Length: 580
Image (cartoon, rainbow, N blue to C red; front, side, top):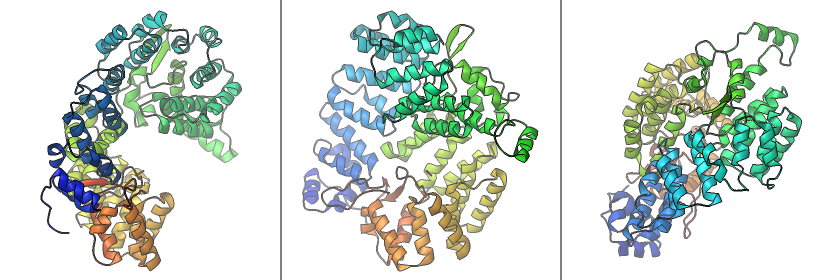
């Protein structure tokens, strides 16, 4: 690749773009990112092309700079803030709520939600909200916020102000396990999905599981997402468990966990219960399996990854066994929302679990796309160290360093994690990968062997890393076995297709891999010279240590920046796109 281009004026960049010299413009911006702020007033047209081509961090940087340059109002800033929020950077989104030159109801609402999502105290803001907006919808929002903040007493005190269409009186009655009151309130409600969900919850709590199952299955087909869908699947898990269908209970719990954008305790507990009960002595199976299950001791709660998060429920993780979690679930009464509450001894209490280090780590990792690697490092270093320094959070930090090619730093992180918590699967995978990318192939294989012995498991990502390592060592059969397994398990994993094509040296497979790469990274492919095989090696080199199968996590390095997969064609450019 040629030497870096000097900065160009906004008018020169526009002329080059209109002339079809798209790569030249992208390279100039990538290599001279200060142009984003300096030319913000004139470069707003470039925001969408940057995002479309995968240079998200500079696209968002330009979007913010352009909005600030025109002294944006609340209406100008709201879509910017929502874009950052949806892209996984609530920290930056919250910071920008104070930049608007005017206020609006919508901006006040987003500001409160961001503060609550980041664990802040939004009590004063909610009170100001109620003073400013005295209508039924405003009261309903405040009730939801008080519940999310754990201010149950304030929520209950606000109930008399709820409008006739509000479902919060019925929801809080269910949380208090007051079925008679809940059903009375629901008898006169409108036929909305939320209303039908509350009626299904009442059926579950009354023990009418067949009726509840039918109602909940209908709600799955509503096409909703997020916390609503999580709540539906979570209650389905409870119903299936109560009916003795533990496999379906586990599937429903997994679906609930996938649907929720937040940490929700109930489906996690349901999953562990379903797994444990499926292995219990009363589960179906032959006489030998039933005998084995009778002799098998139940798992201790302390063996669960999130055992520490159960402290608010009074669970002694060192002594309690997993079947005891059924009592915890029952104490939740009619609540399966992220705003976890318990109904014990006639008192409704907020039970706030500790932050989930995996969830926090994955959330910080997404900031790579909006603000780049330095912002990720700052959030890990300056956040709540009880969480961000937890081994299950730090594996995400190590993975980011792997993705950007900082292999020594990634290695140090993974070694620290294993020194603190030896049974951490991705730390073994990541540590071996750092050694492979530092060209110590034998050490990488040795680390992975030790990791498999410790974990008794080979995760999907191991097969791509190990397969590539075998290919580089010339171990053809071992490489083929791992790479074919990697593709069979995750057929969307681009790096596995590239490695297998390079291994087999089949012209058709190489051409197919080249086409996949053109879709993934069209600008990169324009810069790569040499034979098709050399170009494929160049793609792997540009991807550094990123071998993800998820289209949302795949990235590569070009012109000093981290690029995601291209997402859309723009003016004829061939762009488009593809779990760890």
